[in-house]
Length: 329
Image (tube, rainbow, N blue to C red):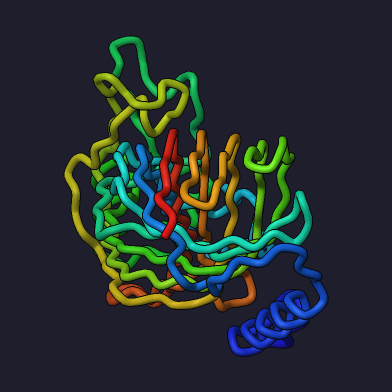
């Protein structure tokens, strides 16, 4: 396969990123610098935060184009996924230093992490069956892949045992259980609207970095995948929070486990920040890291044990902080 600048193999991609970082750091003038290096600890942040991870599983043979590092993952070829975990995040985090380049431009380190967690029964209708009608009048619904995706799975992925299960269960669906821990470390550049010396509004930054993911995936056939409404969902307007899914008649057909390391895209957004030499207050801040695969389409490859074809993964880690206070060293 021939690789271009925007479809590199992993070694060339890392080389391009390192060269880009060096050029940018050399050309950008610094008008106000911190004493600390970008990788040193600037402080400890106490926060009320929600963890909102995404894990999506694809059929690689149906993926048509390369994924955008800062775009929304596509629905084409999607087997199963979950966009939100209803989970309060760890209340403490490290604060990395930030450097002002002008009165409204900044750059600095990025750090996002997730302790080991498990997500069961990924939604086989994710990205295809949207609100408001995934359930019937009594609150129970049935979700599965689209007809074309089920045909592709049956003909191009299933082995003899899988086909026998599907033939015996007319409402079959393919789901998955995922265990993972994640670390994202990177560097971002961005801007904000300054109000006086200490107040910043609409702060946005994006950049690149690296990720490390310890991952375990179990692929499960379901005789039926049903959804029922949750009690007291955290986010009323989000499907993953309003409904819970169950893989009925769960039968494990394959698995993958391994450690993934590579290039990541990083981004952050903060509605309001008050920064002094001793402390930082933030309201409504979001950080996200997205893992970028080393193949020509940008996904993570998962080589299974019992099937000849691999699957493709798209994974991100997002933290939404409602309010936070940082004590600066």
